[in-house]
Image 1 (spheres, rainbow, N blue to C red):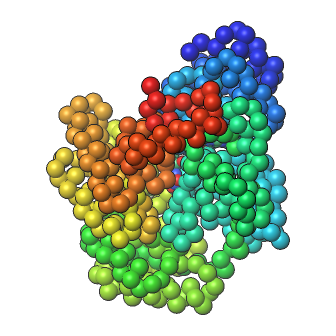
Image 2: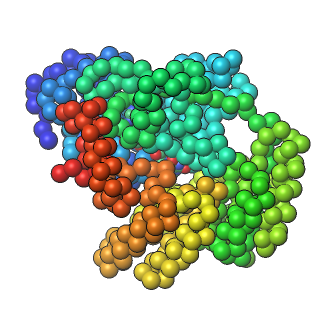
Image 3: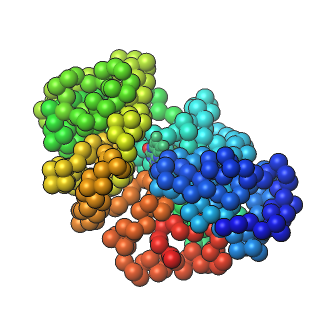
Length: 462
Ligand SMILES: Cc1cc2nc3c(=O)[nH]c(=O)nc-3n(C[C@H](O)[C@H](O)[C@H](O)COP(=O)(O)OP(=O)(O)OC[C@H]3O[C@@H](n4cnc5c(N)ncnc54)[C@H](O)[C@@H]3O)c2cc1C
């Protein structure tokens, strides 16, 4: 859509010339995210104050212009893509850690602080921010809150949702609101903080985030267990849970993903005979960590692991995590296109999910390497395809449909971390009933009566 000269002048008045960009390169760059399916922005605005953001919303409302908030642009479902054109509002100037409060164990941050930078800053003070998406070096806290990001540590510590105490946000109507408080306990009125978490930039623009922190665990032990095949590793996960240990991480990497990451990094990650690997971490006080690590080792051996090894020092641990965090990039390099589905099932159904994946590979003649958070049932399923092969793309679409129906039948969810964005909107009704979707749309209308904020996301609304 074209931005009229009057609207452009209003944006310039709101943020100044340095905050308005519409050259071709910028419009394209701010039109995509990690999904790599974009639509150029018509105009990019880069505010530096909350009042400027409120002014931008008023201009968009006045001229009926779609407004899309962009954090670091690492989303996997096109959440920050302006599918209907309009204005992309980049939060790139909101990068300050405003406060780390050691007494109350909380941090107050602007939304575009990188997750990894926050972790480093609080750990230097003996504190701990557990959510650890694999994108932590490149994704921002605001985007993490808007998507309710998770990561390997969710099995013990939960996802971003558990750590957000309070928010400041600008509504698409221009009001600046505050939700929640610094208090850990707060049951006053509807919990709008939790409603905004995971709302994918469709309800409000987050401008300040208060995060709960924990004391940094004094000890961590990292253990790898390799198995002949995925079924063996899934058996290892079941054995661990049955042993009543609560690791901070139980990551499963299948054989195809292991070989891809070895090619990508140019080094060995697991023995050649390994058809699957578990990366397990336990953390806490040193004595308890040693006891739990011993229980993990016994459980994995009893489940038939070929080898169980503990990382001997922090350098070895870092190398293991480098391999785990490189998986997305490694698979991206292994085929012309990787279609990533982050499905989630109750953890008791993880074996059934992997059985479903094996059947989909066979029935649809596809390579579907998979890895992820086996401890909480959230598995990254990757359809490796070549867009030039129309028959293969048709088979992949049919397999995706079966996958989503399968996880819903297993009482799971079509997205455990990445949200719906626009890329999964067509599948929403597999999981949510028409009544629930209609209720969500009424909530959306209460926040955004003009429908300007991130249209075309979560559901297909014509
Ligand atoms: C290599 C790689 C690994 C990844 N690993 C994980 C993982 O382990 N776990 C996981 O959960 N995700 C993962 N992701 C996905 C992605 O990093 C997360 O979804 C992340 O939370 C997005 O943050 P962002 O700042 O990049 O947000 P963006 O992509 O910029 O935006 C995502 C959504 O949030 C909205 N948004 C952003 N900022 C704000 C704000 N201030 N106010 C309101 N709405 C806002 C946008 O409108 C959009 O809808 C991975 C991505 C990559 C590329």
